Image 1 (cartoon, rainbow, N blue to C red):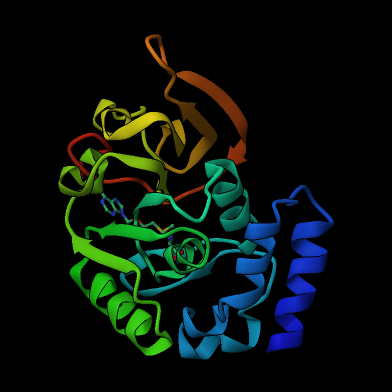
Image 2 (cartoon, rainbow, N blue to C red):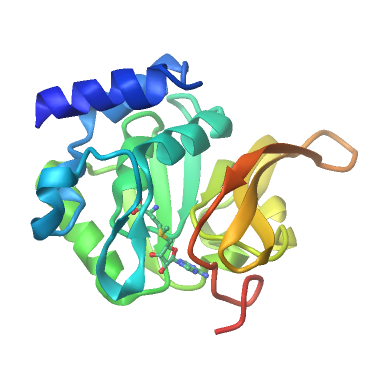
Amino acid sequence: MESQRKNMVETQLKNRDISDPLVLKAMGEVPREAFVPKERIGIAYSDGPLPIADGQTISQPYIVALMIQAMEVSPEDHALDVGTGSGYAAAVLSRIVERVYSIERHASLAESAKALFKKLGYDNIEVTVGDGSIGLPEHSPYDAIVVTAGSPDIPEQLIGQLKPFGRLVIPVGSLPVMQKLIRVRKVNGGEPLRENIGDVRFVPLVGIAGWKE
Ligand code: SAM
């Protein structure tokens, strides 16, 4: 599995546009096979998303790396991850930053991810069950926020929970399954800056500031 992981980093990440050494190192460390359902372990390093429980998905390795690279995180940062899912993206992020707060609306997914983090010794991730479309105010402000589900708009609450110069990376689109990956950068005294990073496909962000159930 380790050689498959190394190969994934070389062919799926470095051969594309992933160049942040912290992201490449973290992607080379986290055992993706631990985050996929047992029957899919053999294809854990395939170049695509895979189904997990509750009708949700674990994102394509490249997309996980692209989103974390876009967060521009550094080792002293505190980050919020909205949509824990399998826990894979939170795990990768936790190898780079000081602390990760991860929020998931499905309690069963949150519990499995928590158990996995404990097993792997990833003790700087805190998982909460709830609606992350409105963020997680109790641990804010964050240096960076990543949302790994598609939202109809950019939730104001998330921008409000960023530190000055903080970054929000979020898939946004008017259809529930097709989005543009947007980075919003908070600047001092002015409108936040928006950049379009590319086209993505995520399951919907369901919640107060997302899609209705
Ligand atoms: N980051 C995950 C991983 O590495 O496996 C993949 C996330 S999956 C594509 C999207 C997740 O967002 C699902 O687990 C879904 O239940 C969750 N989700 C959707 N709406 C949410 C909300 N309002 N708050 C928290 N989680 C939400």
